Length: 292
Image (cartoon, rainbow, N blue to C red):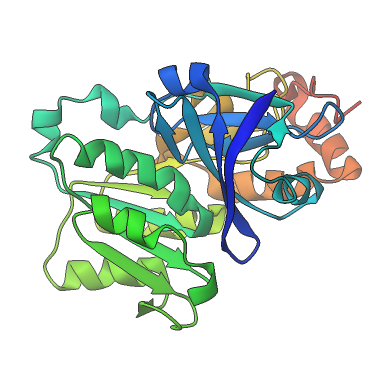
């Protein structure tokens, strides 16, 4: 059992939890994720690691209530425990493999959409701890959905908060802020975008026009998190990849976002899964049990 040390609401249907998980905290890196179950009958929910404290042996996760599993999680309080808390899974961010001194010569931009702010934070924090400044754009539906603003301010070089309805920060989509910055003369060497598929698609469309290399973090439907089930299959540069083991980070200009979004929709229904089995043949996997 994994004890919840802290649980608080940070936005509309969005909550933050600090979980006692010393083994994961000891070995995790920015960009990785965990799979969580509230009890032995609950669904497996993949969640990006938002923060970690190796000395305290804790992992921080940020969750939005969107289904039965996450709603059940939202009812848990400090002192309760998770049945399973498995990780770290996925490959760490490529940034941590680079020479920090070389990174200091790069101008890096992070673009976070909604809950994508949570996985962006540990990467920006990692850079900040090594004296590397990175700019961050965070985009939300409205003021009520804004999360982690103060935490991000503490580690970002410049933080640009934007809302779709203009109720807080800048008015408009994150792509508008990127365009505005370039028009103002600010240029970047690397962009890292994390958020909804549709957001990442249009960020990559824009950054390709700007000749700005872009990395995206894909967190599509995941079931087992070990590459066996095939639920997180994506096509990158014409090759089949599985986000949970090959990623979750990929070259955004090579990802087939239209196929990925269509596949996400189809995978949610029995008829859709049957069509995917037919279309994908031997590469479909299907060992998660959802296609049985």
